Image 1 (spheres, rainbow, N blue to C red):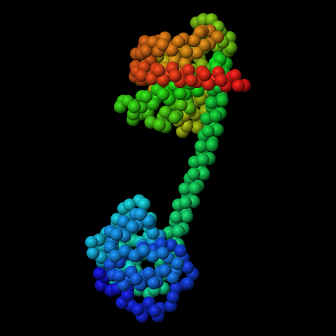
Image 2 (cartoon, rainbow, N blue to C red; image 1 turned 45 degrees about the horizontal axis):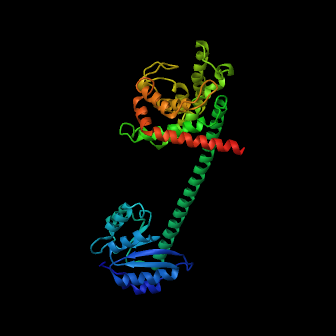
Amino acid sequence: MSSIGIAALPDAVDNYPSASPAPISGVVMIVDDNPANLRLMEEMLEPRGYEVRTFPRGRMALAAAAGNPPDLILLDINMPEMNGYEVCRCLKSGTSLSGIPVIFLSALNAPEDRLQGFRCGGVDYISKPFQVAEVLARVDTHVRLRRLQQQIELDNRHLHELVEAQVRRIADAHLATIFAIARLAEARDDETGQHLERMQTFCQLLAAGLSRSTSWKDTIDHGWIDDLFHASPLHDIGKVAIPDAVLLKPGKLTAEEFGIMKTHTTHGAHTLRAVHQRFPDNNLIAMGIEAALSHHERWDGTGYPDGLSGEKIPFSARILAVADCYDALRSKRCYKAAVPHDETCAIILEGAGTQFDPAVTAVFRDLSETFRDVRNAMDIAALGASRSV
């Protein structure tokens, strides 16, 4: 037990002028192995409006605090099993309890004892024998500070939520604008109007499949997949610069016309680079540049516009190349008929290691039936939407 008990000082308790009677609500935990001290502290604090919880052992107090944290803890030092310093260190080591203020209330008066209390995480130190008004004033002050701290934390969380919501609204507006511009470019030669949505889903499927491989799980995370999902509609944005006579020609393009058609990659990348210069930290636009410029590159280096080969081709563009090829073959255009699913899959798998990244085509092979189901479902949905207009 403590060498000097609080209850040994009735004269001080009875005769010292009382503190301000203004009631303060809050929960105060008192930890002391002397029952008389616990009883006296209850009699002091309960008239002030406090809910008082008393414990004779540190371990009991820790368990109770974990289940129902108090606003303040008054802690004796000399106790069996765990002394007050050990109890305080345990409190401060747990994130859920570390914010609870601790006032040491002890007969140990040496400067080193006080310093050790503060080093353990205590916010105040009251020596026994004490003055009642001083204890009440310090308890009131630290409970008020705790409440203010909690209110500040609550306000900060609310402010953070408001900022996040506003950022999401701005980001959603930007994504909607980007998608609308991409749709304007795609609408010129997409009869169904669903190519961009299908590309987003196909790229997402391939990227998610690759992320499950040990080779790519550290490269492809949720944020990367999300960026690819939103950047994929930008791959053909450069088509706005291609004349209708070339873009919509029903027959085979001449060498000169094909040269013009190929410039949609550089036109798209050039446009997006201008945007990226203004927003250099925007990962989505950076990936959009890769998609626009390199989605017609080939694994064997015979693609365009830069003749990149193998892993020199941006990973996002390698994924997009497979997704784009599947959807392009399956789609009817003014210059060609739609290719059946099985034939489309055979063409893509045959291109592994020449036109396409073998790793991406391997994932496509595993997901080919999912591609077919997604394509069929989106075609049905698009048909239903057109009939309802």
